[in-house]
Image (tube, rainbow, N blue to C red; front, side, top):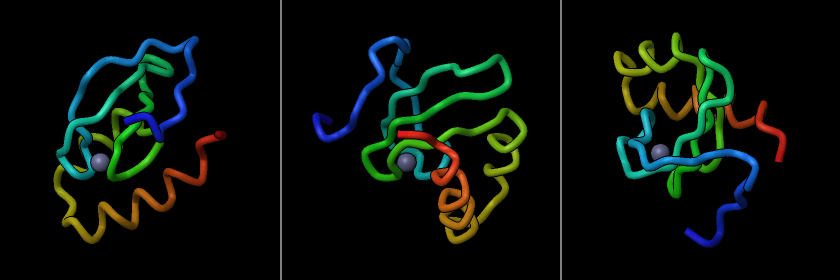
Length: 75
Ligand SMILES: [Zn+2]
């Protein structure tokens, strides 16, 4: 995953991407918000509320959600 840019001040740990269910890296931004680095979805932030909401979404709606989420990540 060398193509992903990592912020070395953050502590990433292995996780599962809530959007595509693939292997990803996760870092806690705040107690209620996490940032994901996913090879398939890119970098995005997700709140706890969105994370539980996305489980009930279709793959199509997850993709739409992801488009919005990625705009808010400063790279
Ligand atoms: Zn993903």
